[in-house]
Length: 340
Image (cartoon, rainbow, N blue to C red; front, side, top):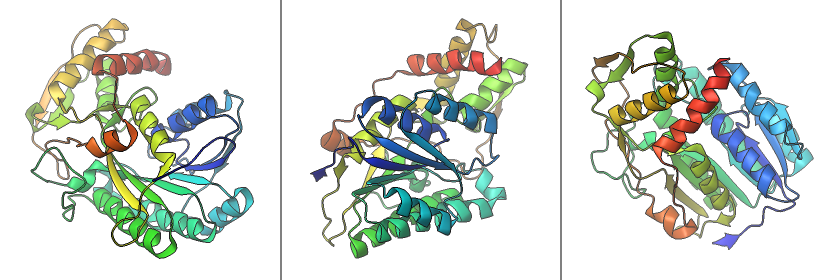
């Protein structure tokens, strides 16, 4: 592994108006001296665009060296021109069409963004050599693996959604490009990330919207599900640490590594809902616990996500520190203002 200083460097972040992308940009701009960030996002209407705007406003209010480009990573000529103009040292690819259920009805969006878009990023890194490419993969690549915790050594050849298949393909593309063109590549399999300004298609946000309206919340598999919920600030610290160290060469000579990034403490969905309701009651957003509608498992869903993060811990000292009470408390405080 070789160390990379981020000071006085140009960093290219895709998905900069997204949940993790905006918080990563904020952390870097606030903590790394002389850093310059070029952020790109195509601001799709997959969810409330005003939320994406709020994140961008948060970044521009920092009055740091942040340049935002509204554009699509599937637009090759745009990407080529940005790499040529800014010559980034480190690239963090977080742009993707997210969501498991949405991929069942809207497959085109996933091929466009997650496949063509990521291929364009790799091509740009090939023709404009970078010190490090860090890219988002997903815990969904583990599919219906029965063995837990999920380890990066596990076989992941049986995705149960198109979203998962595109993320697995990103890992394969990156490995090939790393080997062929000596691009240092690190992939991060994100587990369920939550927090203020999070994605409205995530369960905790949907639950909150329904609880506020007094509607029953749908809980799949009769509530018998476990998720490795990880607070966004913990995730961002992990990503920032990873950016600063390139992987060692694998046996076949690729400068390539995959890590799980999660909490490695799965929580039951029912407990998560209970803590969320308590936080919302505390902020006077709701007055009492809501009604629950228990439903069977959804297509493409998995029973449990559970990250083995021992590699990330060993190589980077990664240790999530935020409890559900703290994280959901911060979300509830933010949500109170968002609803107004």
